[in-house]
Image 1 (cartoon, rainbow, N blue to C red):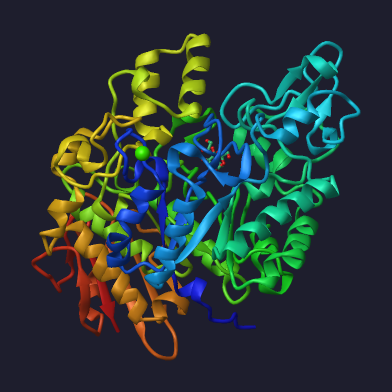
Image 2 (image 1 turned 90 degrees about the horizontal axis):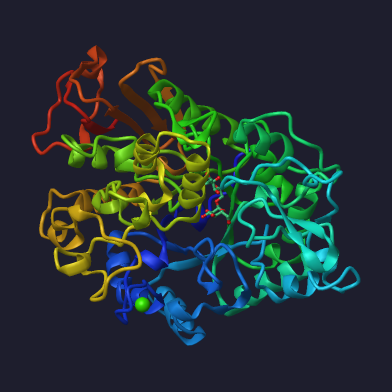
Length: 551
Ligand code: ISL
Ligand code: CA
């Protein structure tokens, strides 16, 4: 079977974290009018689709991933009028808009939960999960994604509610048909406004294992796979959602999911199953998490990294579709993580752009990566804002860990690395705001910023524009077959893409050393794009050199 061609496969997506993108009214917080001001910039990148992280009403315990009203805009981001204008502005420029659906949990300040917690016979009670204590201890020993436990006591009903994330994010009970209907109604509300799709937050977690068994593992990754993700009714729910709402609109969906693996990935996206269009799996993103989780980082290995992309391509090809990303608001900056943000900042940022835009799958570019924004290293924990970082910090302290080492891990791993304000120019606060931003700007903004790179045809920004344009003009890079050459090479990532029309060879030296590849002499076909200004056709690849050959 061959899968069908569509706009959402060919599209390039630009992800916006509204809080950190652009502040229009100078209160230090990015907002919707700030996005409107930058629509021409976004369009100029050549992207087709914009995904905005949550903009709904929220007490912001987890920066909007704790929704208290799914049908309204949070005040600090603007009004529904601003939103409508944003959507109109996006459509007027021939682009589309994806929103973020946070349906595994609500905020504890949502009126459903406010009701549910009042009494055992409240009509909203079964919107959430309630359990009595287990002989004086918590109902289960389950760990939260962000550290700590997953049960919070509710005095009025003398029992506990489940929260896989923070205690202000109670998990919704999808067993209840009323909850599912509420979610479908919300989806419908936004589709009827004209949005073009949803990124579905932790959708892999919505069906719970009702036995609520204690876990036997200390490894969070294992716990997620065995106890939290891919519950027994997940596919029934997704098919129902598809049938009830998704299938009635020309929209796209991308399901985010811890616990989505090579073994079960197709269950979510095989086209004949009518569930989701594509997924974000985390096989390459959690590679550097040690057994102790995020603040226990280990080195990542290129052979493993390539294998992740090759295995996923092989698994999904001709049956489903993938989302390709190397960074988002939950991880450190891709150039700091997979490239070299010091000696080879430019080269490696461009190389990663080439990788992103030549793999099979829909490409997702995270704001700031198009100028090579890097990780940040604040001197003190008080400059960090992310609830996960702060919770893990507190726990590490209680465990008596060496806090200098923990701060080093925070520098490397904190989600705040990706949440510092967008670097627009070398003006104060990087041109993001006239007021002090909600989180500090990365101090390298005077050298890494949009305004500088606009002036420079050799900048990372210019390279992104060329790569996006090239991908869009060459559909072989979207749909064509993929084959990794030299899968065991420890510095080189080389792969071929081809179909009946044309063929390409992508050659990436992902190391700080010169690499010699004899067969480069034999590649027939010209180099279309490279990241060094002095193009080089011999068999020596300079550090982080990237070449795109047309065969
Ligand atoms: O960042 C993680 C914890 O180490 C991931 O496991 C992350 O929590 C997971 O990928 C889900 O992320 C999404 O849901 C979270 C929210 O905090 C993230 O920002 C969101 O992308 C809860 O809604
Ligand atoms: Ca603002």
